[in-house]
Length: 214
Image (tube, rainbow, N blue to C red):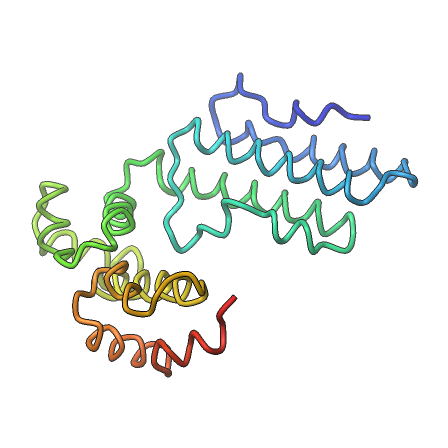
C-alpha cells in the first residue's frame, strides 16, 4: 500500500508540494484491495486532509472566513459514498489551496489583509473602514476603491456578509443564547442586528434558529 504520509512533500517550497499524482496513486491502489473496510479508507482521506491543513499552517496561509469550509473535509468525507468522491474532495481542496496561494501572492495582497482584519475583528462593534485603513496605514478612499475593484463588492457589504454568515452559525448552535449572538458579531444593539439579519436573510434571527438549530 502506498505510504500516504508522503503525499505532502515538504522539501518543495511552492504550491506543487501538494501532489495530486500521489493522491491518484493512493486511490488506484485502494481499488486493488476490495476487502479494505470503508472506515479505514475514509481514515486515509481524513489523514490526507489533516496533512494538507498542516501544509497550509506551515505556510502561515490564513483562508478567509467565507472559505472556512475548505479547512476541514471531515463531514464531507464521512458522508461520501464512493472512492471517486473521496478522491475528488481531496483533489478539489488541493486545487483550491494552490490557486488561493497563487492569487494571494503569499499574503502580499492588500485585499487579503483587509479581509483578514475584518475576519479577526468581526466581533468588534467599532469595526469600520476607518479602523481598517488606520491598521493598514492606508487611506479610506484607497482601500474602498481597491476592494471594490478586486472583489466587486464594497468593504461594508463584505463586513455585513461575514457577520450574517457568522450569525447563522451561532444561531444554529442551541448552546448560544439569542441575546449573545448579536454581540458576538459586533452588534451592540440586538434590535438593529435583527433588522439587518432580516434584510439580508428574509427572516428574523429567532425564526432562523427554529428552522436550523442543531
